[in-house]
Image (tube, rainbow, N blue to C red):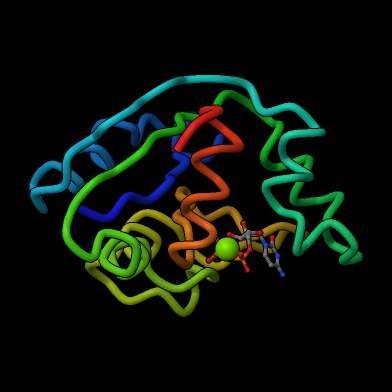
Length: 138
Ligand code: CDP
Ligand code: MG
């Protein structure tokens, strides 16, 4: 069984969408293997987004991701990495299709960062790295 790492980002928690996001995972048949609410630290976030830290817009991503508590977890299931990415929808909610989490619960923002409710690992390598980073084991 494949595993992926997910985050319900501060906007998802603030807008009381934890239940609806978890509901979609469970309805789909994925198993929640680990679940935790926490406050992201600068250092951990920089490691998580190592590919984005040097981008000019990284400070706005940092401000967004540290603006409140997040829910982190590990999801298990067949082809869960790509399936969860499809359920999330496109990065920019403006492009996300209706039926996806980002397409149903977010919209194109005017602000500097793209607030899009959820995160999901984008490959088996990222999933293993992110699970180890956030939970200390894989
Ligand atoms: O989350 P996803 O894998 O779809 O996108 P990413 O390219 O890995 O970017 C990570 C996160 O950074 C996005 O989900 C956005 O919240 C944020 N981001 C942003 O605010 N502005 C951008 N131009 C790119 C990403
Ligand atoms: Mg990504």
